[in-house]
Each structure stands twice: as C-alpha cells, then as structure tokens.
Image (cartoon, rainbow, N blue to C red):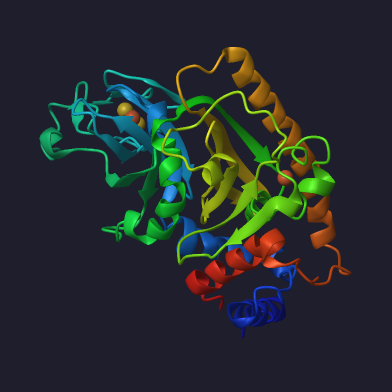
Length: 374
Ligand code: FES
Ligand SMILES: [Fe+2]
C-alpha cells in the first residue's frame, strides 16, 4: 500500500497534467522531502535521462578531463587523441579505486592505488607486475564507456545502454536558442557548490520569473524585471521562459550577428531536466548542472560563458560577482524554504500565471510523465 503522502503527491501530479496553465498549485511536502522518492528519482530520472556534465570547451585538448559523480557512478569525461570526448567509468578495473580527481590534463589516466594506467580512450595501457596472472587478459580490459552527446556546447551523458538520441528531443528548443550560438561561447568561470535544498526547489527557483523583481530587487530586477517575462510552451524534454532585458540597460558586448533584435534583448531561460538549467543570452550565458545528493542537499556545478574574444577580465569578474550576488539571494531564501516545506502547516499554494511561475507546473508535468509515482 502506498504511503499516504505519496498518494497525495500522485493525485497532485495527475491534476497537474490536465489543469489549465494558469490554474496550477504548488506540490505537496513529499515532493520535496520524501527520501524514498529520491531513490526513485535516481533510478528513473538521473539514472536514465541525458545528464549534462559541463561544457565541451572545459576539455579543449586531447587528454583534458573533468570528473563527475552521477548517482552512484563516478564518471570521467576525457577528450581522446582522436579529438572525441568520451564519458568513461572513473572506477579502476583492478580493485575499484577512483582513478582521477577534479579536472586536469593527462597523458594516461593513472590509478593512484597500484598505478594501473589507462589510455585516453579508456583501454588499459599498463598493469604493473600483473604478467604472471594467467586468467587476466590485459588487452581486453578497459573502462566502461557511456553514451555521450554534445548539444550547443554542452556535454551530456546517459547511464542507460543505447539510449535514444538527445538532440531530436530538444528540437523545439533548438529553434529558440540557435542564433545565440552558445557552442561558440567561451566558458571562463566554473564553480561547484552544495546547497541544502531539494534539487526540484533549485530548478523551480532558477526557472521562475515571479521572484526576479521582489527577491532580486537590486541585482536582477533592473536587468530582467518580472513583468518582461513570458512563458515558452514546454516540450517533452525541456521547458523555459523568455526573460526580456530592460530597454534602458546599457549592454557593452554584442552577441552573435545572427541574433535578431528581439533575441538580442532577451534571455532564454531553459531547462533540460533533470540535470541542466541555463540562462542563454547574446553577450554571455550561464549554466548549472544539478545533482541531488540527498533529499535536502544538491550539488551544483555553475558556470558562465562569454560570446566573442573581446571580453576584458574585469568585465568577466563583474559578471561573476553579479551572478554570485543573486545566487546568494536565492540560496538564502531556498535554505529557509526547506524548513517551511517540512512544516506540518505547509499547504499547497496557487501558482502565479504561466509567464511568471509556469516552470513549476512544467517541472511537475515532466516529473509526472517520467516518474510514475507508486
Ligand atoms: S585499485 Fe587501481 S590500481 Fe589497484
Ligand atoms: Fe533567483
């Protein structure tokens, strides 16, 4: 028999599938606080969907790598000698030690424990003093490899065997962001943080415009006020909204020449759930890769990428500083909100119209489609 809290959630999710876009309600407590759901989310969402690990230009040269923990799988994305990025298991084939830490450049991936080493495609290159072992075939030993797909400069992986391609599922979004050419932007800032919040609160917050003017009164409101935001009709594997830029805002750097005037004065706030949100605009863009670690803890890898080679470091620093200012505002309110969501007196509230808070409904609908809550 399902837990009563899950029965309430199931009913809320079912209602979200068919409610009018401007008649939505927030989700019940269990959506944000039930540890059993997290196990299911790891199996059906993070363990089965395409998950963004970062940006391809974090690995510009053969041998460059980044590491990433996806559910229970330690991963390494490395650019091979053939120029291709591969996503490999970061677990040593000898006795399971973790091979690489952080990010860097390697001629070979060398496990720190007994120095087994792997080439840049994941094939075992050397296993010291192992020749006498007759039952072990060094030549066929390699690190397991996972699916990898690039999309607008983002690197995605998928832990399923032979998953359907990501690109075709995001076609509706392609048309909206193509002219920004995020794949040409240079990632000049990346940082990892752990926030004491449920991962869905993090996505809802990043993807809703309702709080931009009140919470970010001095940081984002002068640039992207709530009133200039409009909802983008969601696809099966994405959702988003347009955050218009205030017309009186001076913009020092231009974006790609393909941009229309409307695109040049807009930021496409996009989500490829469950693991990526991004603010895509002409001069520079942001991205956040999202990994739940507990029901109330999420690891986020956040970055900023800039269009064109002319960005002065002081202007990059200014953008980074502004980013941290408004993210700190979000972090404070979300951290407090987790206490609210655990209260026995928390109750579902009405969501603002789709232009302002449609992402919360879009995420619930996506969740309902993929999760089949028991
Ligand atoms: S566990 Fe990696 S070399 Fe032994
Ligand atoms: Fe915010």
